[in-house]
Image (cartoon, rainbow, N blue to C red):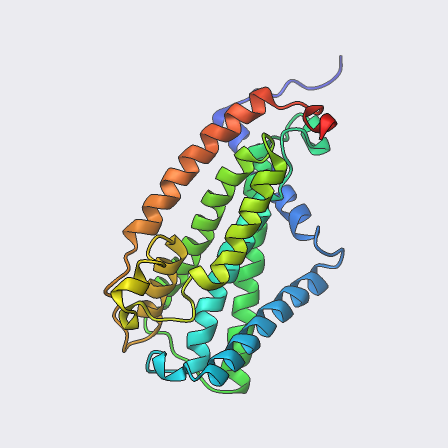
Length: 273
């Protein structure tokens, strides 16, 4: 009775949605650990451990000669950062709150906001982790130079965008058959350990081997990123257009599937499973 009447305008609605996305993003970041600093340190340690493992693997297998001329550890980190960003973004989107989640009972909340919050939270964590690792390596070990920092950061955003887009497709299909699509999404993430091509240079691959990696948008992103990072590498067998096209197509399919799933979603779907 005494509640003030607020006139809704497009600008006011947009600001309210952005505020909701901000708070949902903070919630998604703090979901991994109650202490945000410890959560960030855990993610940094995971990245560092992966870099160390692949560095030792390259050294033991004698693959250092196949790397691009330049800082070898930066070559390893370039693939790890893109792979981690892509995989984490996909996992965050797939694991975000769905249409039957308890969070959706609050009227301003909807699955699109949950997806946006999970994706932005992942992007924030990965950029901060990569920045901290690169700064420590630059300050404590050896100075590093990126040939094109803007292009490198754009490829990091493209790795994140393709992960979000593919994750939206899995997210839309997950309520219909959780077991099957859960296994498929996990299999895709695990397969990218090899299929992303972060251990190889596309220019150094034989044509018959290149065909096994060329389908993967992350492979193109990593190869193009190394072209922006290193002065002595010019990628010939990858393109930026392919992952951008895949990202746009998957976003459209994911949004269509999400809206369709939201209309048919029911809390009792999994009752008989």
